[in-house]
Length: 131
Image 1 (cartoon, one colour):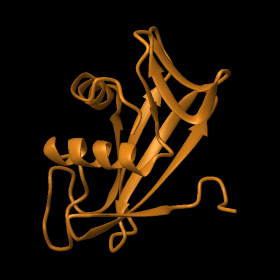
Image 2 (spheres, helix red, strand yellow; image 1 turned 180 degrees about the horizontal axis):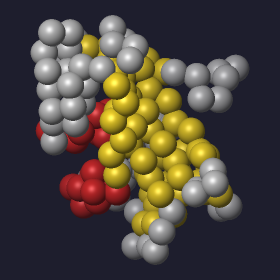
Image 3 (spheres, rainbow, N blue to C red; image 1 turned 60 degrees about the horizontal axis):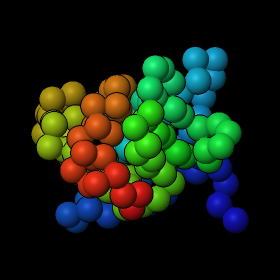
Image 4 (tube, helix red, strand yellow; image 1 turned 120 degrees about the horizontal axis):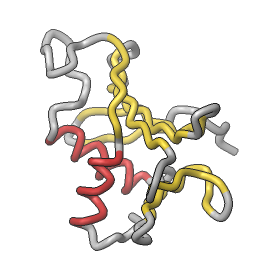
């Protein structure tokens, strides 16, 4: 059985990514963390904060579910959903760069980004499908 929060592997376009999902308090947020396997100190955290019309884990949802009031639900524990977020973050220049290449957010450090704009794009283009 996989330990909750343990990094999972996803290979996309020849790059190995490590990702995990965690729910945090006190300000009730779900965080999808993405990093290249070869860059342990460069990480993108996509943060879903609870707010008007925005739902993060909790009854009746699972720990990786994020939803909007319009009924769209995405499960962040599904590799296909994570791949879609990875692709969208890449299209926006949010991903950590490879060694020796400085991207928008540089090579080292943790960058947090509001995930709801990515979610809105994914649910609009995917017809609200879950994976």
